[in-house]
Image 1: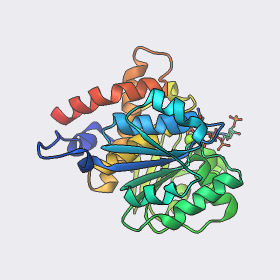
Image 2: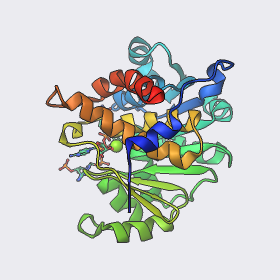
Image 3: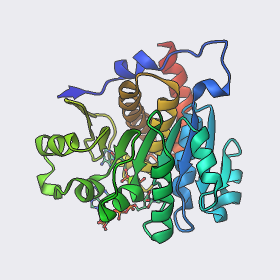
Length: 274
Ligand SMILES: NC(=O)C1=CN([C@@H]2O[C@H](COP(=O)(O)OP(=O)(O)OC[C@H]3O[C@@H](n4cnc5c(N)ncnc54)[C@H](OP(=O)(O)O)[C@@H]3O)[C@@H](O)[C@H]2O)[C@@H](O)CC1
Ligand SMILES: Nc1ncnc2c1ncn2[C@@H]1O[C@H](COP(=O)(O)OP(=O)(O)O)[C@@H](O)[C@H]1O
Ligand SMILES: [Mg+2]
């Protein structure tokens, strides 16, 4: 088993080239946020913007429009239930589906449309409610570059492994049956990619607060839009999320998602120049 390190993140988070524009750093689409969980989509989108994504759009319940614009004017917004969803998917390089999406029929319909529209070259990060829906409805896996980010109960739903049975070996075997990269989140997150297992020693209980996982999806999306190869981008994102939370936790009892998000640009600048 390998460890996630700052060196690994340093290797791909490099200074930006001069001859670039916003389109050079990823077009991210976040699909999530129902009337109950709008904050999840806002945190995911904020993390993507603050982690350097070039353009960020959010397909969500229209009830979230004012809150999103007030918190994050950098993001664009569309109604996830409208046909604008397919257009936005076509334009995106990286798509996140699930944060705050919910698990009702409306959410299932949106998820199925995302799975139908996404293309093989696109990166699709599947999180939260979307994982729960895939497991509950036995949905076929879409044909794209998949990244799964289950917490332990979502991993139980997706893999069939009860929490006490989620050993590294058993989880690795289960991850092999699922296409793409699996980020199995816990107090000691493991990333399963091909035959490799990476362990994340960064992070701590200050992160045990609603929205930490939503925030991770935005960082992964931003890194997937900016850095290559995809495997390194995902590994670096998992490390950076937890490491920045550790920095926040030096002076704060809880590492709130909004606090972690705010610290991202300064840490990435430091990382790129080290
Ligand atoms: N501000 C917002 O808008 C926010 C919106 N959010 C969005 O809400 C949606 C639902 O996501 P979810 O994770 O809250 O619910 P679900 O998948 O049902 O799992 C919870 C159940 O599993 C149990 N449990 C046991 N161990 C666990 C573990 N290690 N990690 C986690 N859970 C564990 C747990 O047990 P209990 O806490 O009751 O002891 C409970 O019974 C999703 O779309 C997400 O993005 C959230 O991000 C919050 C902020
Ligand atoms: N005790 C802990 N130690 C380290 N990391 C933690 C701890 N508790 C939570 N985390 C991290 O916080 C995130 C929680 O994700 P998740 O449960 O999906 O949150 P949410 O859905 O509320 O956004 C994961 O990245 C997880 O690794
Ligand atoms: Mg979550």
